Each structure stands twice: as C-alpha cells, then as structure tokens.
Image 1 (spheres, rainbow, N blue to C red):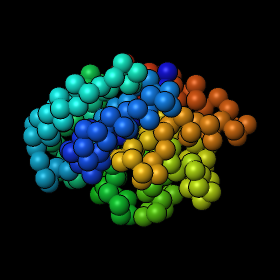
Image 2 (image 1 turned 90 degrees about the horizontal axis):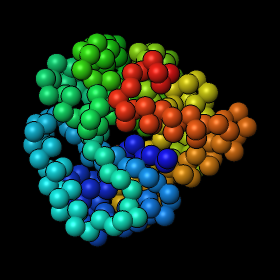
Image 3 (image 1 turned 90 degrees about the vertical axis):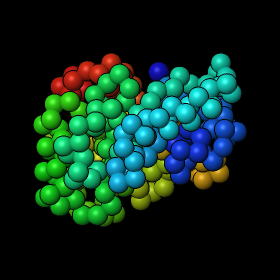
Image 4 (image 1 turned 60 degrees about the vertical axis):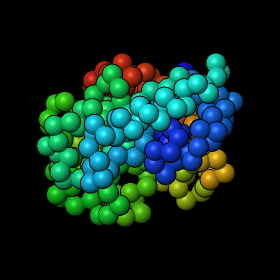
Length: 239
Ligand SMILES: [Fe+2]
C-alpha cells in the first residue's frame, strides 16, 4: 500500500492546485504512480483563519472536486499542514486539524532557528495528550537551523516525514539519507502542489532510498508506519 502523507491537490484552497482540472491531473499522476491513498494537507495558518473556517473551506474544495474523481484515483484522506505558532500550544481546536479519524497532526516548523521557546512549545503540544505530532519535510529545516536543534526536536519522540523531491538532488539526498540513518524519517510525502513545478511522487522517493543497501527495507518500514498512523496507533508501536 503506497501512501502519500503530504499534498496540496485540493483545488484553490492554498498555494497548491489552481483549478479542479489541475487537481484531477495531479490525481491522475498519483494513480499512474501506484499511490493507493493520499492525505490532503492544505496549509493552515492560525493567523489567517480559525480551524472551523479551514475545515469548511477544505470540505467545499473537496465537494467541488468530488464529481470529477475517477475509479482509479487514490483514496483520499483529510488533514492539514499546520504551521507552528506559539498560540497553537493551547489552541483547543488543534485536534480538529489532525488527519481525520486520528490524533496525528502534520506540523510544519517555522523557517528560522529552532530556539528553546519553539522546542518547548512543541514539547507542550505533545504533552496535551490529544494530538500526536509528525513533522513535515524535516530535511528542509536544516537550511535554517543546526542538526543539534533538529536532534532536540526529534528527540521529543515525534515522527518525521520527508519530501520525495528532496531525494532527487545530490545535496538534499545526502541530507535525507542521514536523517533516515538517525531514525527520524517514518513516512514520505510528495508535497505535491502544482503540475509542472517539478514535484515528485512518493514511489520515486522509495526507489532512491531502497537502492541503498542499508535501507533496502525502508519501503516496507514506511508502509507499516503509514498503516499504523492511519489506524491511530501509538508512537510506541511505530518507533
Ligand atoms: Fe506542504
């Protein structure tokens, strides 16, 4: 079962798909790549909207797309890519932004040094008990913060996702492999936004990773993790 945990294919809800036609085109690409399940994770910025407004907009976008869906398209799940903000730590509606049917929240870290205040904010989020965090494209933050800071973050026992596209170029591939080696990567996502942007489906990411003998069983590992996330199993069963 091939699962894509991070995508922006819903039409006209964020900086992803610009039309229903483009959304269908993205899902056609996913189907061709053998993706069985895709989680729609539009951007959520707490400074711009409430979770209720976000969910209403996400539902509307899906309803507009629904009549155009094809038999061969992957099954669709619903979530959000939630940009971290200190005000979210105590936001009572945070669980509404998790992958539907689970307590798993896709958290995007701010593009800055991950200072003590941010790390302890994420720790407080995990201590709430009503959300479990998996971090979006963990490879990206190393452009803004040190490995030491990323270590601190991931040692809060969070799950990590990397983008398939990051495995396509030498520098970011090396970085991704290092993060996999550290045990920080549990699932992949395409972070697919638009056709023609160079986004890459997860099958290609798995192909690159498993070519490396050290990680030749990574696809099965990620598949198991993915199924457990969707069944809302605990972190212990995943790590
Ligand atoms: Fe994204």
